[in-house]
Image 1 (cartoon, rainbow, N blue to C red):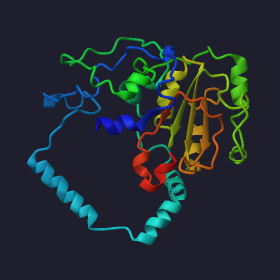
Image 2: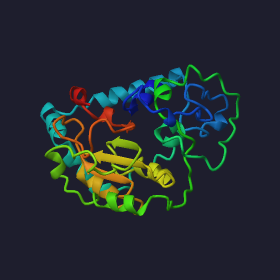
Image 3: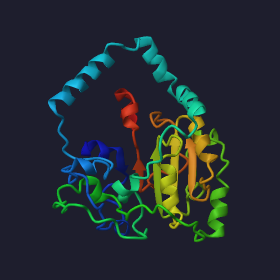
Image 4: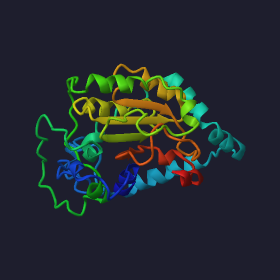
Length: 291
C-alpha cells in the first residue's frame, strides 16, 4: 500500500533537488506508523497501515471479485474504449462536471514534500493520540529526495505578493492555443511559469480535485507555479473556468501523457515535482512504457 501511494507521487530530478527545498518536517503520523488500536478512531486518519482482514471479510471480497469477473468486456469493445478513452472521459465530465470527486484536501497533509519549504503553517499540527514510532525507516525514498513542506493551510488569504509584472506575464499565456504547443516545445524564457523558482506538474488532473487544494496553498508562495494536464479537454475547461483558477500561477492544458511525441508547453528539466494521483491504474500496462 505504501509503495503504491509513494509511486503515485513522483519527483523529477531525484538527487538534484536544491537544498533549499528540503526540511525535516513530516506529518504527525507518518505512513507506516498508523496502527488502528481503537475502532472508535477509525476516521481519525485518511488511511491505516498493516490492516488485516478477517476470514469473513476475505471470503466476502473473493466473492465480489468472482462476481465481477463473471462478466467480461468483449475484446473489440476493450480496444474501442482504449482508443477513444478521452471521448468517454469528456462525456463523463459533461454529465458530472466537477461534482463527482471530492477535493483531495488530505493530499498536502500526507505528502507535504509536494510544496516548497518556504510555506509556514499557521498553527502546529495536532498531537497524535499515540506515541510515534521511530520513522527513520518509514521516511521512504521520496522523503529523502523530494522537497518537504508543512501542513496544508485550510484558510488562506489571497496573496498580494506576486508582482504585477509576473501576473501580466503569466496571464499572457492563459489563452494559448493548445494546437500550437503540439508543434514543438516553447523556447526557454517564453513559457508559462518562466519566472517561477518552484514548479509542479500534475498529470491526469481531471476537474482539479488536487489542483485547487494546492493552488489555495500556493497563494502565499508567488514564486511557485502549477502546471496541470489531462487528455480530456472537458476536464481542462472545467479547471480553467473555476473561480479559483489563476493564470498567474497555474497553466492547465490538454495532453496525453502516453503519447511520447507530444511536447509540453515548457522546456525539459525545469520541474521539481510531478504528481500522478490515481493515474497509472487507469492506463493499460503496455502504454505505461511511454511515461
